[in-house]
Every structure is written in structure tokens, then in C-alpha cells.
Image (cartoon, rainbow, N blue to C red; front, side, top):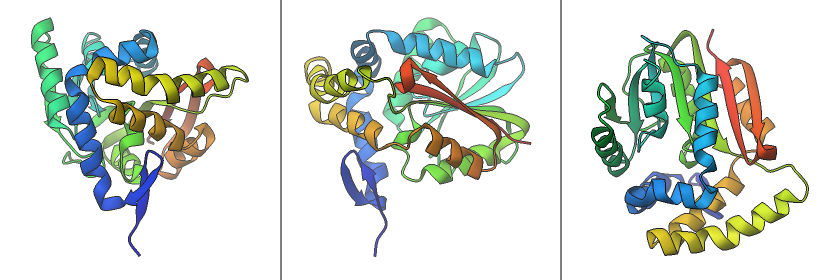
Length: 243
């Protein structure tokens, strides 16, 4: 029997997911940041600011920003003096990030196409590993977490910003209706792509809830794991340390 994994609400052969997710992000790369603003009402900027404050990037640190595509997290960390390697499996997303960095006059970032499940970096390379709104698109999340642990130095820290499960009564129902009914329509209007944004909404629903994902992080070897819900769990910051 072949292994199956989730692709939105579908269950597909594991070997197909990377390619299908890659196709989606190739389709939306040029409109990705505009759509983030449209879908979240600009709130994603505040979430990312808060995320980077938790990471506390320091001058001289080497940080891997995985699934960092268009550079949103990397730009914030580089502004604090960290040396940031931006990695993504999708070259089109990286191309958008490089272009944005050039437009903003941001130098010194390293851009590297990487599969989160099979990083080419040596063990114990980075002081911190960040991934924002990317891990739910990985085929084997446990492999990505294991790789994050491998490439971190001892004392290194893992931080993940991801959509999660809304726990506030009332808001949960409103958000479910908005995401399922309106987000694909916004995707069609703004990016000309309804199907990709329907997948993105469905992928959030299939992602493990906060306690389950925290257990996965611990199983990868991280200690002192922590979850910080934002807006009742609409998004969450997960963290852990390698010791």
C-alpha cells in the first residue's frame, strides 16, 4: 500500500504532494503578499512582527528562515543584525523575495532553494530556525522537524508561526464561514486563482491542533516547548530549544 497524505481535504499519494504544492506556490508567487494583506486585513504584518520579537535575532547570529520565500520574516530579522539564510522549495517564491530585497536595498541575505525534509546544510550550523506559514505544506512534517533539529547548534532555538485551530466560541464559526466562502473568492478576484486559495484554507483545517503539533516538536528532540496562541488560536507561535 502506498502512503497517503493530506492535500487540502483530499488524501493523495505522498509522492504527489511536493509537486502539487509547488505548482500552487508557483501560481500565486507574484500575488502572494498582496493576497496576505487582502485575506488578513493586514494583520499578518502584526503577527510577523510579534513572531520576530519572540525569536529575538541578534547581531552575528546565523538564522535559517525556512519557507521564507518572499522575505517577510528575513527582512525583519536582518534589520536586527542577524545573518539570515532564506530557503524555500519554490524558486518562484525565492525570485520574488530577491526582487523585493533589491527594491528595498537589503543586502547580505543568502537565498537557497531547499527542501525542508532534506536540507543540504551541515549539522549544527544555525543559531535559530524559523518557519512562518510553511510547515503545513510540507509532505512529512516529522522529517522537516527532524531536519530543523539537526541543523541547529546546541542551544539553538526553533520558532514556527502557523495557522491553527480557533478556540474562541463565536469567532470560530465566523472565521470558518469567512475562510471557506470568501477567501477563495478573494483569491479569484485578486490573484485570478480560486483553487489555490481553497487548498490553502483546507490545508489549515487538516493541520494538527496546537497540543498535537507541540507533541510533534517535542518528539523531534526539542525541549522547553511552548505554544503562544494569537486571536484565540487563529495563528500560533510554537517554539522549542535544542540542548
